[in-house]
Length: 193
Figure 1: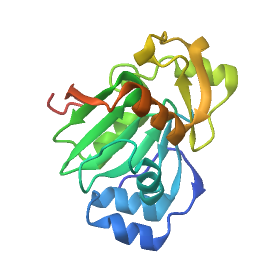
Figure 2 (figure 1 turned 135 degrees about the vertical axis):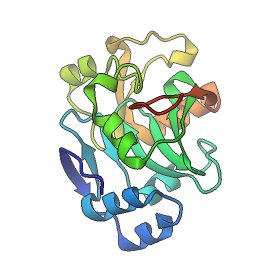
Figure 3 (figure 1 turned 90 degrees about the horizontal axis):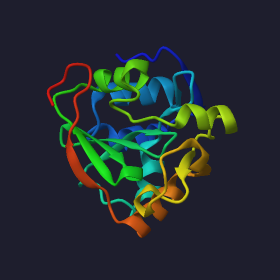
């Protein structure tokens, strides 16, 4: 069973939602939904375990995910961690990229998200710390978004990050920059790249 070192619940995930997504998600994710509900993972507000039904509803028609895909996590920079067909897709819409993680368990992905040593290389979380220090941690369904968008020439600096609704920001990126494209394989915690 995956146990987060620190977790702040925002809301329970309804049993009917868990039943609906249980056959498409890793068993450890299903257990995390039952045990933890939706909320913040860790102490810095960067990673959020989400209600998969809410994410599916908000992303419908916005970002084309594969059939059967389940959104498990979001980040405070608007990234999505999605389980689909036995692999994890890390949708980094701000970069227009999708990184693929193969051969990893839910526990490995969750541990990587919580590991400070992996934050820069794997999760590309800069300049989140500076923005969070300046403006505080975004609310559960908020994120920091680059203004102007990186795809439109905006710089990847904290002074160009603004608070935004998570799903609204992803819709703006998709509309102005197009859907993210597969960039390559991503190695976490010793998984093959």
